[in-house]
Length: 160
Image 1 (cartoon, rainbow, N blue to C red):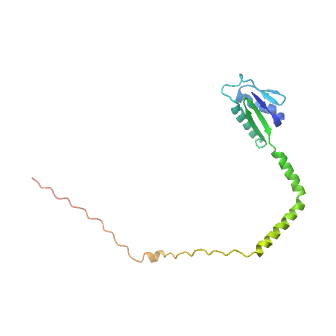
Image 2: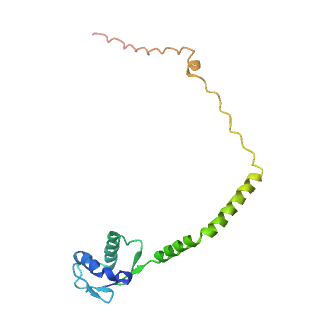
């Protein structure tokens, strides 16, 4: 089984020590790859499970958002995501953008003026609420007293 490190070459030894107790064998580090013999790997550990271990390692180091782990057969590949490059470009744009920012604000002000000049749509009136009777008004009549049902008398048994 191979783990191609990609952008994690500098953390190869950390990953090696992290995987050793989980996989059951110490992986060999060679040219940006971790190699483990399939026969030496603990019974039941499959490439998908090793992928989960690698993702757990990345999470612990705070790198989960910058790397992804792919599995193809018995080979795992760790790829660096391109999000960092995009973030750097956005920072550069923010530095250059103050001139453009003024233009955008001017356009927004013009749109606000146009909206103010346009006639407002007619407002719908809220439905009028029905008057609720006050509790005193409802209870003016005295409630009828309920009588307890009379118990039926059982006929007396004749003595013989």
